Image 1: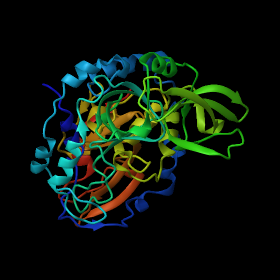
Image 2: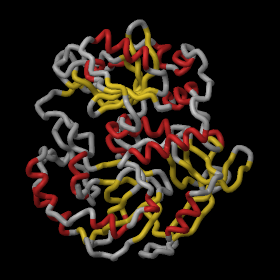
Image 3: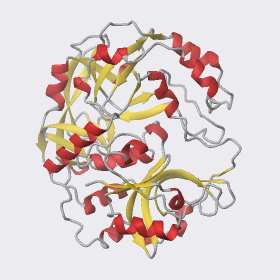
Image 4: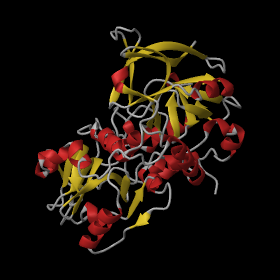
Length: 444
């Protein structure tokens, strides 16, 4: 079946809430969680051998090959034939798709978006510009959008804090295959390793395939292991350049004590060119990175996950933080494991365990008996979580969660990475997280 790029637009809207529901903005779900459960040490101490290597570097490479071969959502960008890729998509009137989907709102004015808005965007797309746009690298905090606009849109009055046009952010220096541009040359439609969508022109650098390959295949890498790390222009770390998120790969030039010099691509000029790439040398704190990927152990992965505690929930990484699947991907990226971007894709990386069990106690026992703390993903439609272990008969997870339906059938907001059991939503019409979990997958 031919892929139409406009179908991508619709897939980011399917999990929104009905605008008839009532929000409860300051509900502190995690207040019932004992203090000690909110530390990584508690969960690590319950593991028999937390420092055992789960997968070696070679085994992780083999796993990545299997994931890429089985997943249509992870792309080897530099092996994309752009002409063939463009033929898979057609110039269709995607504004018609919006007539049958949810209503959209401008979050600042609460006004409903009319078809004129979408038609204007469509008319700005030039499907014939530059027969072969070629390849590029992302720069800075690059974001992919479902439509070529910075205007945020919400899918309901209950989700005004979520920009539903935001697909994901891209780590610096992500390779891109560029397919289309807008007539005003402000946006390009690109395919990245994890997603595709529209990127601002100032967030990419065109370069030859060979130049990109030479750069990204550098083996001397640093992996960001803090929630964020700042990049500076000078060794005294006083002139800020940018910051990057956990799991991002930087390429090392030199190590100077507590400072690491990294090689960053920048634009020679603002004009379209396949020779638009040059490099500058910038600096990060050594304490914020790992020289190479972290060893894949339960201790290390739990520590990495807990570094994100209380980070705000952020659909599609729009404001610099992360959503549920983005959180999972960032954590596993620290170990060199390449997961797809979205929750359904992540749980399907290999044979998953179905747990469509009606009996709650039996379902909890199944999770506890078959789940391995720190490396087990739990999935319910639209949401993914990392299993930490259990207390009594209750499985516990860490996850980036916006909120849940309470007993009063009102939406109770968390909006952060949190430690919870699976009883959230209990006795609501949506049922508890435990009752809604359908799949689990052990990443090993």
